[in-house]
Amino acid sequence: DVKVTQSSRYLVKRTGEKVFLECVQDMDHENMFWYRQDPGLGLRLIYFSYDVKMKEKGDIPEGYSVSREKKERFSLILESASTNQTSMYLCASRTVKETQYFGPGTRLLVL
Amino acid sequence: QKEVEQDPGPLSVPEGAIVSLNCTYSNSAFQYFMWYRQYSRKGPELLMYTYSSGNKEDGRFTAQVDKSSKYISLFIRDSQPSDSATYLCAMSLDNYGQNFVFGPGTRLSVLP
Image 1: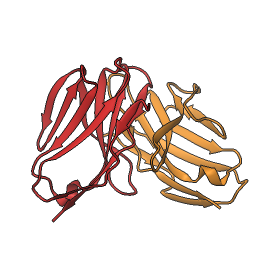
Image 2: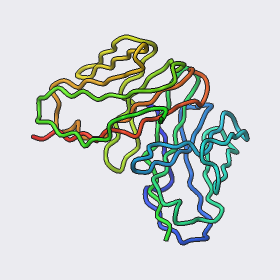
Image 3: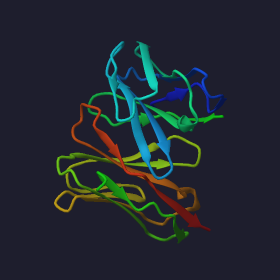
């Protein structure tokens, strides 16, 4: 079974804080993704990575950065958290010719 | 027009009913179609993954793709309260890249 884990299920941060969300997959997948999910808007791609140290912007990268130093780990960084970044953050991974597998999600509240 | 449209629901049905969930899309280049189930406060889990037009069955679930109409469906037979969740459709242009597009999801409640 594919396993994608995320470092926190719930997180509360203050405006202006730097926030790290971490994702780990155990299936040696090449591609990893970060999405945010908001009611009525569905899943929106923030960043993805197709290899170690490689990253590509998704649809809504503003205010976020990512890091992929090891194949199994993909981190999402909110440089200076703002209230409009309150959301559910979902990490996913995939390998070629397969679909995406998601982690359990992190609910982030920025006060 | 959004790239993928999905009725948000909520859809409430009695236990044992047949459920039909639908998505329409605008980009005829989509080749791969997926359905995910997402329980409250959890990540989406893959239910069905299909390529091209036709039907695919897995237990109580049947995925149907009509590329000529740009319409996909998920049927759930003998629905159970445990099927209560949000169902997301997703589609992609190819099997190699990152071009996944998700629908906003339909919330389903199966009442005992």
